Amino acid sequence: MKQSKVTKGKIIDLRLEPVARAMAYFPVIEYFDEIEQEVRTFKSYMGYDRHKYEIGQSIEVRYYIKNNKKELMINNWSSIWGKGVFAAVFGFIFFLIGLGGSVTIY
Image 1 (spheres, rainbow, N blue to C red):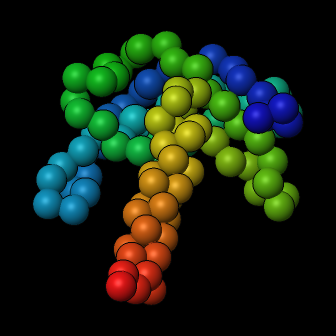
Image 2 (cartoon, rainbow, N blue to C red):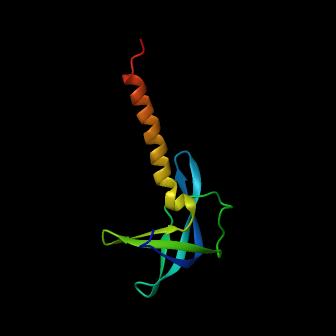
Image 3 (spheres, one colour):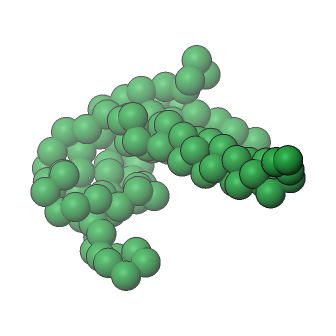
């Protein structure tokens, strides 16, 4: 988080794509890349309900360099922490299941 940069962006498109058994809208965002000094676009890896964002809406974008590759995301809680929290919760559940199978009650 300390090495990332936050900038303003604008939603220029909402792409409807299948996710599991449903459909979700993936925002396409245009932003000014302060590192490369040019306007760029990216599609969010998180899909949302149609009413979450609208075309033309201003939005904050967070980006950082990881292994010489720029990572971009919408600057909100679910984009930043969602995958980590999801993995931790399911990891803890599987840990408890594994622990339950190895405990013998006399």
